Amino acid sequence: MLTQDYLVRMLVDFAAGIMRAMQRRTEDRDPKGAAEMLETAIGESVDMDGDMLLSLAPESIASIMQISGADPAITEYVARSLMLAASYREDAGETDMAKLRADQARAIAAAYGHDISDMTSTEDIPEADFADAAVKDFLADEE
Image (cartoon, rainbow, N blue to C red):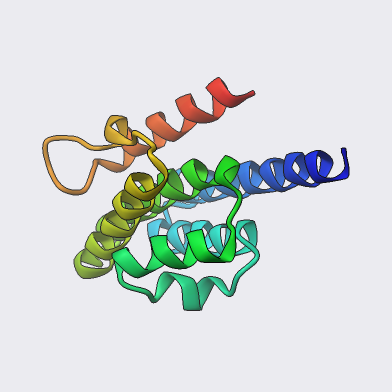
């Protein structure tokens, strides 16, 4: 029961962080700040140093999460948040960082068997509005 309460609290905190980042992107028109907020929320959600974790190559990030025992219940949120951060980084003109975040998202999704294809468009990096809608739909489905 204690583990379940901890997981629920972690998911609620993570979802709140995602929503704050989405608001920052739309209300403040600050895609870089929104991406940084998402990346911070990701680090907190997996109980690791977010900066260290997100500096890893895509294959390594998935392996480290598996080895460290990241809760599978949050890994789809992590993958989707990274894909959303990729779209925000692209909006901010940070193409290389956007590609890294998208590749990290795909690696985590593949490692844990999640389908995040609804977050991709015909381009490598989804339009921010498209990604926002996909995350909002996902969060609504989880409630």
